[in-house]
Length: 317
Image 1 (tube, rainbow, N blue to C red):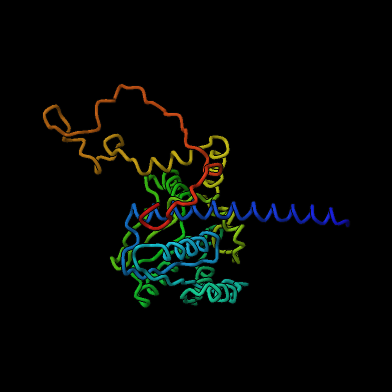
Image 2: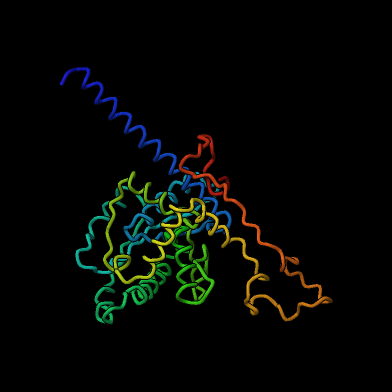
């Protein structure tokens, strides 16, 4: 190979590396901004919090840990992070990967070992998914661990697409208008659970994870079962996203813009008390008006320009 060919090949290689770094920087800024906004909107993190970051070994939890670590450095408040992984003794689970990765990061961590896999397999009925039982077992162990560690918050890696998928799952199969809340209190009242990635798009997380080359640990317990309805919902939403750009963003905005007086839950809104003299405000007289469908003009963030001087901390996003 000639000297000119060597220079040309090196130039192309440098250009590819530079483009990848630019994409990584842009994605990181977007994820930090969205995470910071969600934290601020729902008051997820407060001064002095000790946050247990649940690390599964998947793209979402790896991304959540890195973004929270970055925000911790620039945040105007003090809080601790401790990464926790639950080793469920799934056959073939590479138990050495996460400790090595977390040691390299220098983050405090704890690996909890519980053989929930055998319990799930023993109780599993033919043709049924493992998710319900596995989720209950895992939740109980994580709550116990949070108490042992003195954690004030439990951070889960669910993102915007998970929230929408849950909304449609409950509508289609549960008869409920219910999604995943960005923040909740456990049934026993002892734990506060937060979802810092609630405003983040899964496709951003996928791209970021690929560029960061996380040591992803595949799970054969959940997500890979062919009869899971969640996979069907995910495919439906992905198809909509391709066919109707902006629809997913609009649907998520709808979960933040609820009008109880224009639904049909009489336990949520006091329809019985509405009359001419009651003075009950029910959102205005639009019963006979044609619904206006605004054209979605939200730009694709993949082509948006980001201000390099943007302050990306928890309160200024």
